[in-house]
Image (cartoon, rainbow, N blue to C red):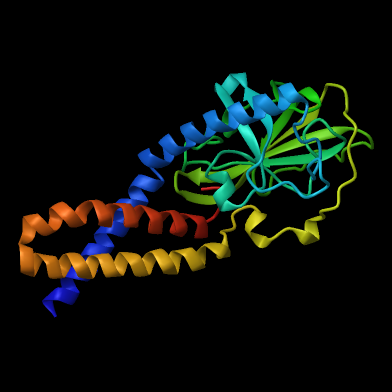
Amino acid sequence: MAGAYGATLLILAALVFGLLLDIGPIGDLRHARDRETGYADLRLALAQGTAPVGQTDQDGKLLQLGTPVALLGIPELGLTEVVREGTTSGVLELGPGHRRDTPLPGQAGTSVLMARESGFGGPFGTLDQLAPDETFTVTTGQGKQVYRVLDVRRAGDPVPPALPAGRGRLVLVTASGAAFAPDGVLQVDADLISKVQPSPARSLTAQELTPAELPMHGDASAWVPLVLWGEALLLAAVGVTLARVRWGRWQAWTVGAPVLGALGLFVADQVVRLLPNLI
């Protein structure tokens, strides 16, 4: 009975420890690393003229989730972020994501970019500070696109006028409310004021998006790896509990703490992917 109690406490401690680190300091470090690697990949693609300009790659296949597609720069917020394809919770751990059923920034129609408010660097955590008429840029494979902010809106606020045919608009989306305790969705509408770029045919529609790509949705595909990593954590906790009896407390902790910590992080990362993608 005591062994089961000890294993349970170890599992809970590893989970709490992993969650706090994953959405906190380690998440911030991961975001900084992913931003640098994404920027290097995007810069090379732009230099070679191979950066995506639509939903598909050069072979006509849908872009892989997480592919860098643009560079977002908002000087007023001190924000420079690599935008990746897709808006699942896993993609938004890397940084802002482009909703796949919308045109890329700079093209005609309404483009949508989504990012987290608090976790993994919280790229859009200060989005509510943008004011009307401020401008920002999005660099894509078609050049630098310039947008002027219309306004910030939350649920119940007036929707901007319908977009005229042949014009471009960008909507930046994140969570609203207290950090890690959102109460809704915050959106910033901005109109394209630079030249509208050609828009390739789009094969993916809103009806074909997975629920995980919609605002404030989690990714159900994380359940399988969560169960597998959870089983590994359970076995490790049982092993450390038995080791305490045979080896002693400090010996067991010396060997078991790093293992439990690592497994706790792996489990926590899957738990985070089940949570709303804009947190």
